[in-house]
Image (cartoon, rainbow, N blue to C red):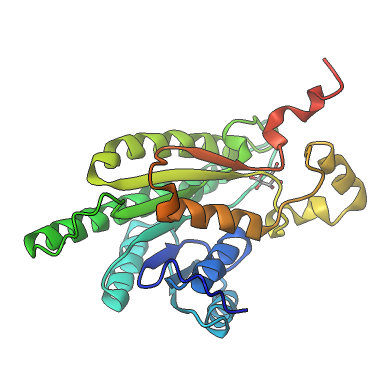
Length: 277
Ligand code: BGC
């Protein structure tokens, strides 16, 4: 369906990890809203190609770029390719992330390191590159006196966090530590970049129906247990998250800086206390 609201027309967005799940929904939605979309993937080219086709069939435009976000050279190459294709960057959705679950006692250094490398270091590398690009663009516009002196943000960064940036998660300490780290990464860079008119915020999804938690929602017993943790009594959809991300990337949220938006059907409301305690 072609969306008539083209609020991101002329803007370029990179969505990391957009060959599946929440990233995919964000990429498709930005495409519908008129943006040039960079669909990033690390392994599954066919899936990324499918996302690009979905964007194009909805009237949107984009490219696919392979990059492992935990590798500095690959991240820098992804940004270079974006700029050589579209000439500028306006929005980064730093989304790529994964889980490698294990009890704490059994967790290997490799499992710890992989999750920290992709979920946290990957966000550092991508957000730093985006910020450098925004500052360089602004400088170039000022030198050419092309800056429109608008009060609005010159660049927007959205980090994909999780309810597990505040909810501890036994059996997933690598993941929870990475997401807790994202919160302070986001707040600290937001504080540093706000004077440059760059807005940095996070979204923290709860249980969203994607492959990352398929094991839970595809099993009726586990799904029933999951709903005890969600006061709103439904699992979230990737589109629930994409809409919030688009709002944070838009001028409608121009005065929102350094915030974490929980998109979780109330999971962070301590639902166990509703009839207990
Ligand atoms: C995790 C999911 C989990 C959800 C709620 C997310 O960040 O990736 O696996 O279902 O948090 O616990």
